[in-house]
Length: 396
Ligand SMILES: *[C@@H]1O[C@H](CO)[C@@H](O)[C@H](O)[C@H]1NC(C)=O
Ligand SMILES: *[C@@H]1O[C@H](CO)[C@@H](O)[C@H](O)[C@H]1NC(C)=O
Image 1 (cartoon, rainbow, N blue to C red):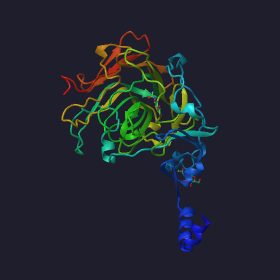
Image 2: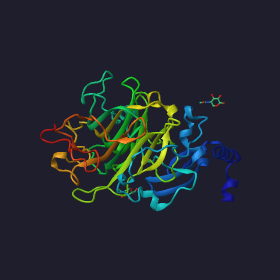
Image 3: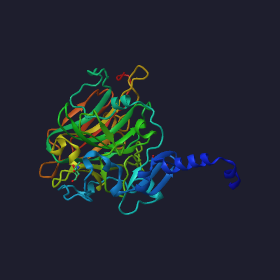
């Protein structure tokens, strides 16, 4: 080695030295990370080459770079909890996330899944196919900007004045036909109209554009300007994480099987009235929150809450996509073990009390492709089955 150094020129060594010392980037596990990130990451947990969790110092997490959060004091836990939510409503999951088998994040750190893999598609395409609440739009209509609305929905919608929403969602791994498409099952908490729509969303998604594979993954999302800008998980600053246990974008350890074991998990979004922050919970574990200051309309209560499924129909073969919603089976084919469900669906009223939705409207964009049926018996609280196969004789 020394011999080699003697034989190369000093300017070269100096150049290498300057590059190594002054460059703000480092190359770690196939991705460049900045020195700022390097000092914020306390520990790294590796499941495999595609699944890497970085435990960030909670006070140096990337979200705090958001311009609205420069002087933000982190709220370590909610100051109020919703009333009337029963813990028996929690889902079946025991070990919630795969990476737990490989390590834990230390106290005062938060687990952030590293974005690995390529982003194959343009921002425009990404925008075109992102999840959004249906808001009365007809699917497959041409928008003023020339984008065809190829989203399909099977959802229920509740209007009023709400501090949050919660539901237990059946976990499935629907088939998604192309990389560009997606299938999501989620809760939307929204305020405002088409010009200044604010949303906070949580649920599960099969979404290869965002995650690089076809696994069922936990996601959250927000917008404060009708989706002109919107952000999933930790892709951009905003969501302040507090939990050392749950990471966004991870898969679930167990998924339901057709006519077999059913797996589900409880997802909640609710507002802490004392400071306006919107908390997100998975399985009753508080994950973190969206600070009230990020929003225009959601700085107050939500006026529209929706629950259900959405897919993006790319029509790449000149016909309706075969991308499935829920389990890929229609409610008319059967309930538990056949079609996917939402159960114990609740909204939080202005007194922070969990209530069954009243006067919920059902919106199904094309019942021959995906459908929804509310369970009149209410054996598991307010519940419904939803989903479908996409392309078939009646869905072209
Ligand atoms: C943060 O605090 C500084 C000093 O008090 C103030 O000048 C600045 O406007 C604050 N920034 C925000 C985003 O509130
Ligand atoms: C979750 O991901 C891991 C690898 O990252 C994989 O081994 C496991 O099978 C996945 N779990 C499910 C239920 O898909």
